[in-house]
Image (spheres, rainbow, N blue to C red):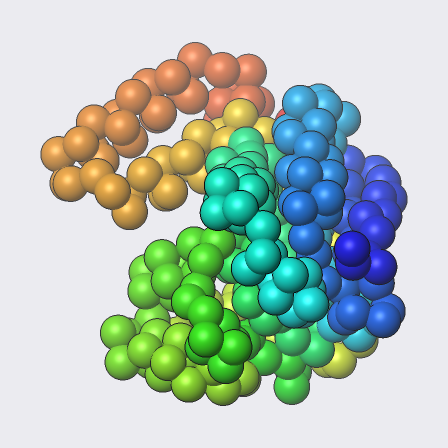
Length: 260
């Protein structure tokens, strides 16, 4: 068992989800995979929640899976271990597929499954001096939770190999050079900056943002023709919505749009 608990806090239309486990640097396991996944799904279904911020307490984002639990899993049936991996994958998909924007506030570092969780978010604010660690190789394991997918989509192959084959911490400053980190914050200020971003997104057109997120995600698998067809469908649907009517009217009237 991990000592980490999931804390929730509403700040207007923004839901802040905080991993809090001081003894384990906010490590996560099957119970947290499920609890966090359900929290993200509930937020997606709540019309009063228009953006989510995911963060960790105690000056660290998430240290990933508890090592003692990972060692103990070797004595359990293979199917049970696979089930735990399925729970992690379901969490990653819930964050990645959520129709609401999800912003990560990363202090200190993110390791293993914690790194995958951070990378699954739509935007990433990291405190200066923090790092991402794909440390599985140090205990004879291989990456999971979509880590190689997210990293390879943003970084050169050789840099991904370095991270995965050596397990060395990669400074967020270097990752920011490649666009993997949206904003660097003063240490201790990542959550404040992430909430600022989430609040701006929450003021935007919710349906359009959900469509944009889906369309951008699909660009990773679609060819040009399929992607253009998806974009055409998206904008043709959007132009008949109340959001578009308000946005276009506000533009012509030179005022700020008010989306509901």
